[in-house]
Length: 217
Length: 385
Image (cartoon, rainbow over all chains, first blue to last red; front, side):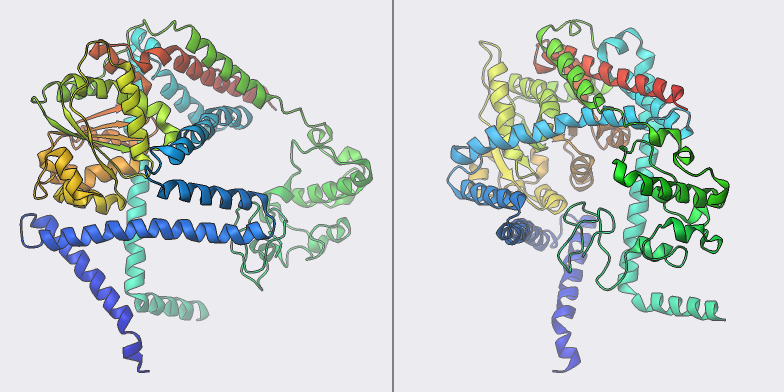
């Protein structure tokens, strides 16, 4: 088979993705234009694909654990049984809001998930007790930050000393928000760079070969 | 394939250890850790006192992995039959780490650090912490002492209250339930006074969620809200539901263009909400997002709030609030409520005692207990050598 024919599906997929992206992008700047209807159709398609992807992911996970369950892995057996029961409950009328699904949600899922999360502060406190070291600069800052944030959100204390809330607010708005934004910006820059690398792999390979030559010389 | 991190067996071709979750090296290649130290110390066994006696094999301490450079502080004592080997290995490792040959060290048990020879302390701290938390929360739930203290009213709470208070009669309000049952305890505290307020204003509520369990948590919140409704107060118009909509940011973009078409059952949604498929999200008078994480609320801001005239209120968990606060400052979020203090403040504004009021003492005591542990830990670290 000709190489260009073999690569046709890949090319068509990229072209389709590009057109879809360009239409959605254009619709952002021209919201009340002819682009609205096709964009809406594309977005609805994305929603449907997301639903199917969720289902595929669930079946993929179940498939892997069924294999391990056959080898006698107790955790996988429980997971596979849980998946089958949850799947049956989900497709029964009423889904997870009534009947078997509702019972599973109200008496198994919700309390289980809440109980696991409720253990978090206890483990957090234990981890702090074991590893907090105020003589270390990082540990001291952690200690200070924790105390300010926690003290600043106790209503009765803040009612008596409003400055505690102000301290907490300034700490969270200044350094904490800045750090978070820094992470997001770094992530976004990384994504842009990764796309660039994907789009122009030749530029990277050329650079690498130049670097290799420099090292050799 | 043996995991280099936990030492347990995994099937060939596995990429991630099934026991500890650490990535496994590709088949045919030595583990990364071993490949790093290969050539520096003998390959098999990795640490032998004999090999390490040779000055030619001496390794700088900075090149050794952390667990080889110093013995662990709280390791349990070894059984007697292996203690001699452990002592020899410990002495050899210590000699290598310090850069001095073992001959200069005193042989035998005396070479071990004092902490390594001590028996590990019994791990009773975790149960004690858990018991303290449990008792304080139980005590706080039984005897609500602190709720009478006036909670401070932040401007965000007043703004959120004002947004709902100025809604026109029969206003349409879209409520997004983007949290899981795990965080229900926190977010429902915020949801209750808001639902009570909306009901009091006679708003027509429409629910939707970006999470699979969103419809369930919405139902739970509505049931609790009905139970807490004061006697004689009207139940308000029935709520409509768009259900769970997968697709996250794409779903929100589509929702902005047409909530009816985006919903799972467009015909039913059009009937229950009274919306036409051609109507955009601006058909709603207010959007309220209940979120346990930053990402969901951000998606609402980025995909919906910037393209719509409808104000967006966000009720988020305390953990998500710091990252969302800048959106409130730049008015992309109309008002941001977070944590139980804001829930209590809203209940005070509403003049109605709800779950936040009932839980105030328990929440405060739990926070004070956490603070106590932090101070104890700090004190302990100062006393520690």
